[in-house]
Image (cartoon, rainbow, N blue to C red; front, top):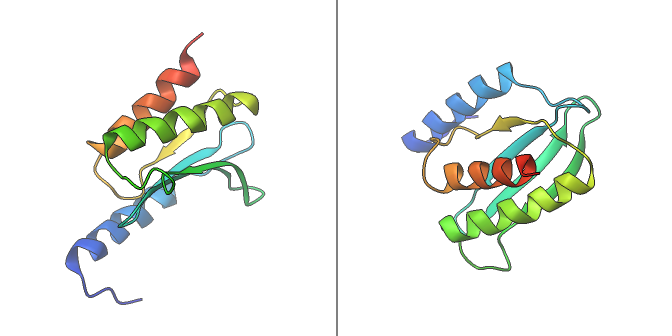
Length: 115
């Protein structure tokens, strides 16, 4: 697949490099994050079965800022706790770990690890 946009091509290369190294298992699923032009999406995935365990998005919020990332992080943490998952592998999908991505992952890990 040829991507004409250099920024997208760079992110795609990084994304493939990340995905080569991490896999989600039933005991330690993969937490995947994606940013579109309009919303933020996150899924907890078991790669051995190819199943999505939990998923959230920010479409009804109509935003994709840090506040929206924190809200979907809290919503996903509630779903994850209900499934009794304590450990996960973070998949940042080629995005730099700052801003919205960092806020999302920090919120999820704080809510999961809170007693």
